[in-house]
Length: 191
Image 1 (cartoon, rainbow, N blue to C red):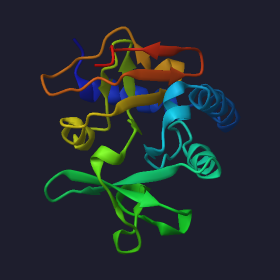
Image 2 (image 1 turned 45 degrees about the vertical axis):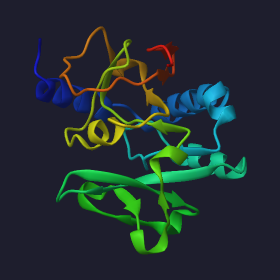
Image 3 (image 1 turned 60 degrees about the vertical axis):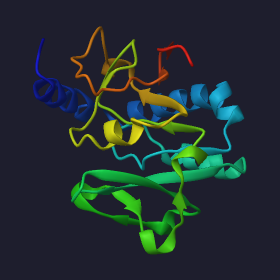
Image 4 (image 1 turned 90 degrees about the vertical axis):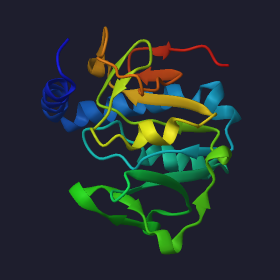
């Protein structure tokens, strides 16, 4: 099995070569599939990262959630102890650029969102398989956060981000559903 670090680098190259118009079109297709899902329709509060190219665009998802009266919570990572918390976001002005150009909430301007209030979390990743396992960006923040998370986990991905199988570790937590521009994969049975 190929190492995660090699797979990560290969996928970053594939995604980085995507042209902006294809990226925008495929992101809109993925968003439309998400918006028609029961998980979206039933959710009051969603957890979502602020994406950056070449990830599936989440700005449109956040805006749509606000338009529908849903609450949006975005993550803040704490590198010292590798922990992460979600905070309610009411507008994009409550964000600041942190390391690697990532946008995170300004903690002094936002309220902590308790984990149990998140109906579902959009779990980011670079590579996925149909069983819902993923290779993230290497920080392990989501694996730690999701250990005791009881809600629904959904990932958004371009079809080229799906492999037959990704290498897994004992602590990896699969997502319930992966929404791509070509198909929606129900990965694990809800408990």
